[in-house]
Amino acid sequence: MFIFDLTNPLTLLLVVLATALLIFLGQEIKRSSVAIIPLIAFLALLIIHVVQVSTLTEEFANLASTIYKCIAIDFLFVLVTFFCYLWVDDLEAKKNNIKSIDNSLDWFWKEI
Image (cartoon, rainbow, N blue to C red; front, side):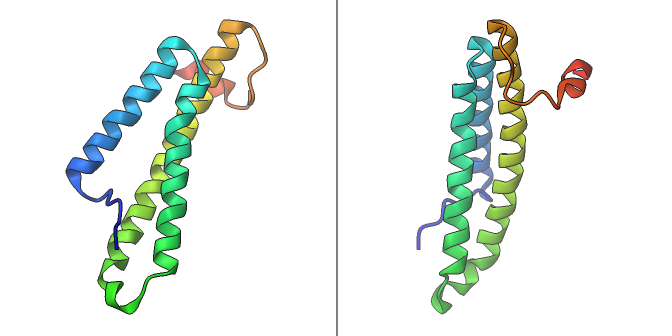
């Protein structure tokens, strides 16, 4: 059974670097469509890991703890990338003088 193992430190480092680069690129060109790529990828990984743990057979029962850790890491990345997406969307809205998708975090962005 293949698992995209995010508990491996090297894999985790590469995923963090790729995510940070995509968020930075979205922030530099002020396009929220670039910042949503890692969010969609982590949501897909979360779905894949949940399906894998729900269809786990007895012969792969030793992988359950690894998959649960991967699910927790997926949730963390979804949370972080969602806030990054909202931030880049706010930057894009200010650049184009349009209304942002969600203005409920304006107090937070003013503090940063």
